[in-house]
Length: 365
Image (cartoon, rainbow, N blue to C red; front, side, top):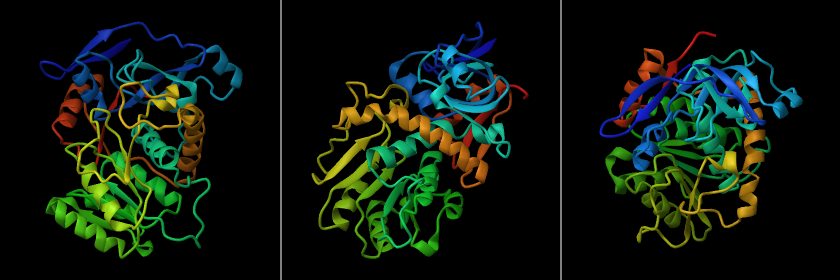
C-alpha cells in the first residue's frame, strides 16, 4: 500500500512510499482510508521534534480487519463505515491507503454523514470534549443544564477554528450560555453556531486586546465568567482570557483550557487566581500525560479514566450525528489524494485554512 511520510525540514514535503498493510493488534481496527483529515499538529509536532512521520490522525473509511478482542465484541464488522482517532506519532497514520486505530477511538459514521465530513471530527471533537467536560468539569451534553439554571458563561477564543467551533457546538448541547465567541474575519461561520436569544455574542479580536476585553465585558452584561477555552493557544492568547475572567468576578476558581504543549503558561501577568489547564488529547489513548507536559491535572487517577471517556464520547458522537444534533466542520478537499498532503499541510502551515479543515480523498468507497 501507499503512505505519505511528512518531512518537516528543511522544508515541509511529503514522500509517498510503499509499505505493507498494517496488521491490527488485539484492540485495534485496520481501516481502508477513504478520506483523511488534517490538523495543525500534523506539521507542528514533527517540526518541533524534527522527525519525519505519517503524521495524520483523522481517519474516515471502512473497516478492513480487526484484532481478536475487537472481533469478540461484535461492535464492528468488515465493511462498516467508520471514523477514528489514530494514536499520534505512531505507525499506521491516516495519510495512507490503510490506517490503524484503537477500537475505543473508532466509531460508526451514520449514513447521513459523508466521509469528508466525518474526517473533520475525531481529534478536535475529543479535544474539545476533554477540555470542557473532563478538565473543567462543565456539564456534558448527556446531562445538560436545565432551562431553569443560572447562566454559565463560556468564553471561546478562536471560535471559527474547527476546535473552537466544536467547543461551541458541544457547549450548546450542554445548554451552556452565554457563549462569548472571539474570532476574526470568519465570523460568518460562527454566527449559525450561536443562540443569540440566550445571550451568546461574537467579539472581534482584531480591534486589539483592550478593545477585545472591553467588548467581552460588555457582552457579559455584568455576569461573572469563570470558564474560557483557548482554541489557538499561541502568541500569549491565554493571557487576556485569564485577565478577563479575573476581572469579571469577585472570586474564583477561574479556568482557562489551552491546547498546545509547546508553551509553559507561566507568564507573570496571568492572575494567580486563574488555573491554566493543558489538554493533551492523547490521554484518550493512554490515560496519562507525558512527564514534561505543562499544566497537568493534579488528580492523575482521574486522568486514567479519560480512556473510558473517549470510548463513551465517540459512541455518543455517532448518535448525535445520526440524529442531526451535530455536524462536521466546513472542509475543502485538496486534490490529488495522498499526493495532495504536502500541499494541504503547507497551506495549514501558512495559515490559509480560514474557518475550514483540509481533507484528502484517498480512495473510493
